[in-house]
Image (cartoon, rainbow, N blue to C red; front, side, top):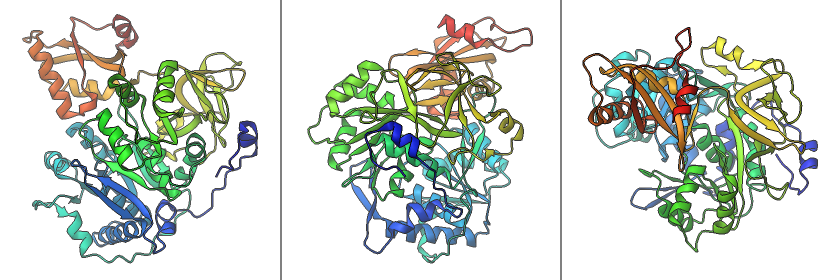
Length: 536
């Protein structure tokens, strides 16, 4: 989409969206590269380090076969297919099969516990789900509460009553499938938000969302694609960042992607992976960079060309460390699930200012506005707003028209984040309008954690806040009022932490638990989280 230049003003001024009336992500990211030459699409590295290479030709055949499986099992255009997998060969096969079938995929994070999983499956009304062995074990506990869920496909070799074998189904299906003719505005994917106020909301995106991501990805990766580019990110492919900041934009341009399922992020292992597979382009969240700096990673074989990062500010020290360690600049981006990658950096286009999110991505009109969608004077704090329409913006919140309406004011989508813009067009993040916690690159809503805490028999009241953490930016802290008959203890705190890990998600459990006799509240009974944050 972008024409390479060193002139940001010209790049921004001359940009025009080119969104065709008919567009399908599977055709754009797979089929047009499946030309019979076995062009490399995916290098999947397993936990033992063995690499499996899959071409676009193979990816087309496999996703067409699974599209036929879904069709034979009765799924019709508009039905939802959940993808409960981490980085793997199977994950993009399912998404591509859904896209080419006119179905709507629903990515789900593998660390989700039963509560988080049940809510998203019930809310989306998913008719089918593809998962692995650990996901199957979680599903067996909640399946009887999910009447819409008719088919579970398991990727392992194990045989389970009530489930189908993903790979056996594909092996017996035809690799010929006539993809549905989709509009660029047709629904493609539901990506759930962090649930910052109440339950998580499903951002329903159209096929055009991929095109909406391209200007920023191209700019931040210094005009992707270039010869020998190879993309990798440790960010999970269940989130908009992993899918649309890395996997699908790379494949749109025919750039191979490295996939790897690590139990946890190991800095030196990450360096080895990048060296072994000649990775040139990365999306590394700030927490990953902090961990790498902490252990002083080194590897002469790592030769990166570009680095995208985002989710929290890097600051001058970390920016300098990246420059010294990798010989390139870390280019920060800003966006959110509902409208992603609207601001970014490229040191060749304009100087990086430590702490700044960067400047507006070509194609996006980003302004600082008030709650009515009116611009505020330059330098003043306000809400980061994105003028509509643009192809990156969601269609709506799934089955939630009230929340959808609240997301807009005048001509602007309101991000809910507070920021400022300086005289040179740089955007600066100030704070959040709501109580979202930014921890290890995840945006975590307190409400969902609080709801899960209340299910523990010892918990009467709870409030969850983020407190400063040198590695994660923020750590999750839970303030808890106990029920009568329970006494505060370290053992009870650990029990409650483990309960949240199992019921919700491993990345959403409170690292700190503080017992209290009462919680600060407003006259209407709302917890004053800002007072708890002030206490630390």
